[in-house]
Image (tube, rainbow, N blue to C red):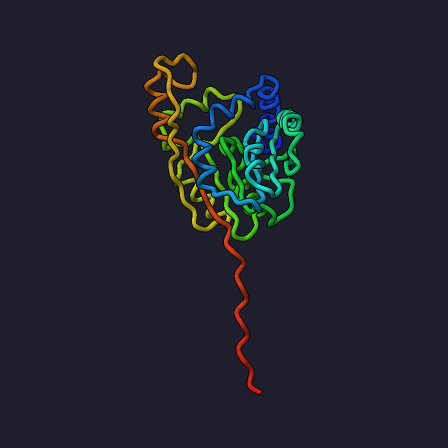
Length: 242
């Protein structure tokens, strides 16, 4: 499927999610893995932060309360962006824009931190998305990509057939390769377990039973991290003879 067709399909699907209030549900679902990630990001007051796939804006609002710098959320869904804007009117340092990972509507070298939660496997071209994140990062900045749907956790493989839009089921090694190809240095990954309580009986459609759900949460989300190297300083000129 062509990128523009996939973008339209994603926008329409997540507009339906917005109308159904599913963007707001994500805070409860994702907070157990997001809170440890925010701690690892070590946000500082002067940080300028981008959230790629910001949905209803719940994570941006949390970050905007921790930093004094600009916080920007982008989402492919104009419906999600409208809901995020309405819920964030009291924040002076917070901006939401419609956009996609492969073409981020912001200037190069601006952000000191980038985060994306449960968005990257929807991107039509993950490598281009990471290359764009690299572009908008300032030298020395870093990116954290948090992913629940990845090849190394077999308890989530069934999700692809249940979703209405195409997805990429990639391994940690494949994501590491994409980070490196995009230019990132110090690329690393780790697992972020979900320690929230699990039901005794599971009746949803994402897992076959409660035991599979518990195993999935114990395996944890995949957290990918990479940094944009500082600009190389020019070598001092050799002294010239008088």
